[in-house]
Length: 468
Image (tube, rainbow, N blue to C red; front, side, top):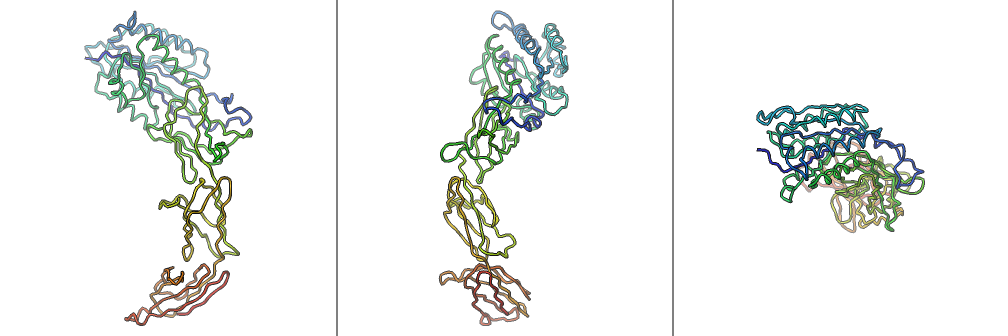
């Protein structure tokens, strides 16, 4: 037997937002004003429960009459919204309860312009009859929208009870969200309690609607979110708390599914303000700002029709890597890590400049020998310059196969630099200036006593030849 606890499931779906996010805001407008040329077309499918239990009492009337009145008023209010198209799907209205028809759902009025009267006339004719195939109706609703980019597709499911068939609305909701077909649902329960709310956490966001008036208010909120564009700006703050940082990538994720929703390159407009973005209020967002290292901010909520400021501390400075003189390095690189950490935050080439978050870093320069620099400071809006000497060249020649290694004299201690390849005949190495030792033994020698060694010096821009 169907539970009579009334519910209103509201599913908001966006099949394509690509065209919306590529519309550039007018830099001459205030960041608190939505650019006038951003008009998002919206399609709303009302999915209406006409099962037998809709005859149950609500206030001084029954549920079906209250729902009809509320929905009719909402549809009438949308007659002059040129950017909004409507459709109506009904379930539980064709077969009696005794048949338990779990496919009793039909698109009664498809999407077309100016179909408001058709929808309201059909709503007036509805007589509740059957069961409640919520999951199946949701699956079928996904096929009701014409395929078109740049249109927000929204499903509003109105029902007074739980699933009566074999479907699982939670599973359907999650699957459709992960595929990008619908957004995270809003759930409004009449007479619900904390236990009821907990049961539907898997479906979406929960709200109570215990009267016809509260049902009207809820639908007003939903429609407002559907037709009103919502704006935001990301404030990347310097050490003084000013939003001066910019020119960095940003990714907005759906915090529920982890799906990528928007990618932007952060900009500051001609008035010196972070640029205005258009976001869909149906989502909760996780934001990743692709500074080095990355910044994250999770569970960001925006309010429909309002402007939201999203702030992150992102003070940055520059690291410039330079080699003195004329270098013979093809592409000398440095591993950059945050102070005391092993994770690599970037690999930067010499003779380039790169922005990093303000702080201290450890550098590992991939020269021969390796050069380690600890606690390198990056300061706000400043350039930290790292210079290393111009290298020299070592040429090794041998007429026989040898096992050997090159070492660097470091405060009376030998640091291993590189091993000699077996079968060497002539090899050239680019080395940093300093004193070195080559240690080697012929392959055909069977005793360690036949190990030879030679000291040599490398100077900046100079060349050294060694024969083994």
